[in-house]
Amino acid sequence: MEGREERDPGYDDWFDEPEPPHRRGTRGVFEDEDAWVLPEPGGKRRARPRSREPIVIAGRELGTTQLAVIGVSLVAILIALLAAFGAFSSGGGKTSSPPATVNTTPPTVSPSVTTPTVSTAAAQAPTTTLQPGDTGAQVKSLQETLTVLGFSPGKADGDYGPATQVAVEHFQASKGLGVDGVVGPQTLSALQKALSG
Image (cartoon, rainbow, N blue to C red):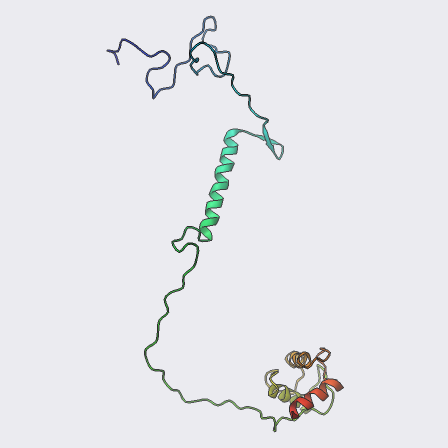
């Protein structure tokens, strides 16, 4: 650079910042903020646009840097959410299941286990009205009847507990009766009719 006779006014190299123009009588103090900008040819300066109203969030005035940080943070959160939901996966956001495998070995035959079933002939509908909390042979008869009809309350133990009450409610709902879990005269009649039919 020493061999250069002509220097461009205002700057040394295009990588460096321009040197501020010098003014007489200011002793290095510049009067406007755009002093580092070279004047345009013809001596006219462009009017610098005035800044807009400051952005105030929650009573605090935010500067340009703070707004930029907030914007970048929001974009990062959006990208993280999209990644979490698989928007960037190779399947186009669709999850693929592993390929199905076909078992080519013949099935083994195990001895069959028979479960005891209650036939409709063996089950006998209760003959008295019942309610939750009752116990005895009539409750056991109710439980066996419900099991035969497909509303199994579990083991027929003769205790009218919550499972039996739920089974009675399901039976009542299937027959269009009032659902209260109590074997009253209408429910008793419907049980007897369903068991005989």
